[in-house]
Image (cartoon, rainbow, N blue to C red; front, side, top):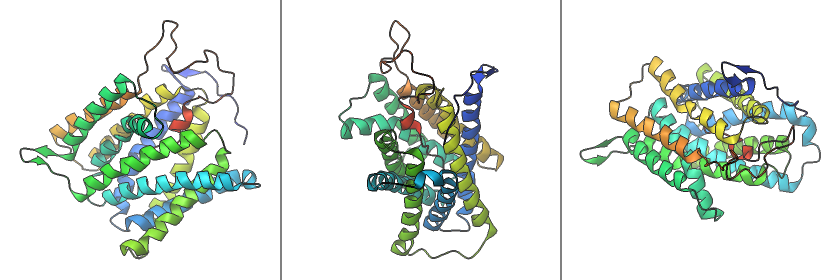
Length: 325
């Protein structure tokens, strides 16, 4: 699949590609409410299986030519990423049965500062000081969003599941950074989406979940979520050819904000203390992604001052998938 080099046209200070990323953060924000609504008509694991089946079919329709000649190594890499997607989205979806979409979105954002901490443990890559400070701020904000009171922290089942979901979500980002540039993107995308779907369906008998009665709510929500996932992935692959990883991450922090706006319109109300916590999570996320610049204006992690036209951003693989519901 050939993608032309994006243009540099700017509108209101942002490039067309940056506006495209802003657009998909709005879609991400809305997905939390969609899933929360679907959970009133379907079990979480059936919905995870169904939505990622729809996404896999959508991706296969686009990348079917590249599926010819797929190797076992590509299947293994895609399956590993898919298992992480299954764990992250599955737990997050299960949590949305009992917590508001806004709370889920802000708690899920904690995965961003969590990624470099996991890289420290798994890849022995020590985080920068700003990353540690950002993770600390985000953790404090997480406690406020979860509901800390005079008797301590009150974590319900939904909050616990959502908090645990940030671990496989962060693991997904690390796996994408390891495999994303080694194998064909189309093949990886199809395999990981199909793996997440199969694991979702396979979990149903293990937890005693049955196939829900037919309802147009889960049907259209699942299909819509599948199409949205495919659209988001394609947009990111195109836009991040010219948008740096750091700038893209800053744009992505708008995801929980849009989720809060959509939730507010739908009637959800966030306590003032939780709003403060949400602000700390966003601040921590931004701070963890800031990179000190050298005197020549380049970041310390960017050794190539003039990348060739058409080359993908070296850090874009770590942002190749997001944690929207």
